[in-house]
Length: 208
Length: 94
Ligand SMILES: [Zn+2]
Image (cartoon, rainbow over all chains, first blue to last red; front, side, top):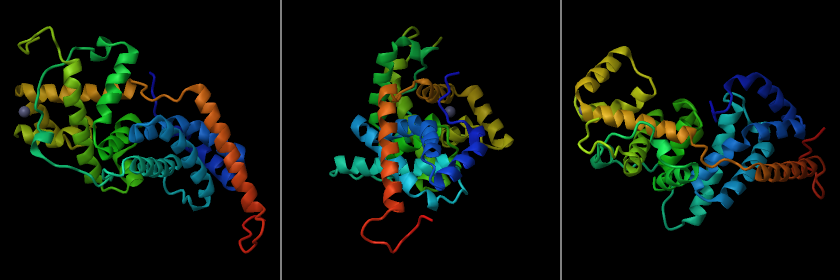
């Protein structure tokens, strides 16, 4: 319930929409926009961490997709192709805002401490219920903001949007081991940072 | 299997993309290593919490506004392509 992943079974009528859009049917393209605008916005906001930038990314990514439909080879899914465009737009905006900091998907900082959990504490059984909706979103937003852009990009595509490792690698021009290693570190870092909000306070000695 | 071996395989384990043999070794490690059990469990929760959080939902009014803007930009582009004023060396439209 409450699934936020794009429907995979929609693939067959999607090709029909893509063909119509290629032939110039803007209302067919509008259907594609309706189908994926929420996903593109979510991805853009995760990467840029800026609302205005995310809005611009949605507009520019769809416009670029429309302008380049003729180049869409149909070997991959339309959504994966669109995500690729959106990620590039989002990274470009992030670089513009933070010229002092290197923003690259190649970024894959490896340190032992980084992957070895520093703090191992069990969490409450339903940690998300410790906070109300607004508080929870703030915690999650603040936490993911602290990850390097390359980590949060891989995390949002794989774990939030539900792309496969192969699709993520394809969309980001990364190798499969590259995606996997960033994903592992992203997940572990998020876990580590969420500890202080979600750990079980009732036990104290680590025993249930 | 050491804890650091376990961690290396954790992502694949959570994604259920590994052979039965490796899976059995990991599950054996989980039987007796409380730390890895907790890390595995809380990492799984981390993923689920983010997946279900509806973080960065696109509000309906903004959604409509963006879509209208996109459609009108696409119309602008279509016009430009099918009716290129000035130069005419790339007549892509029939
Ligand atoms: Zn262990």
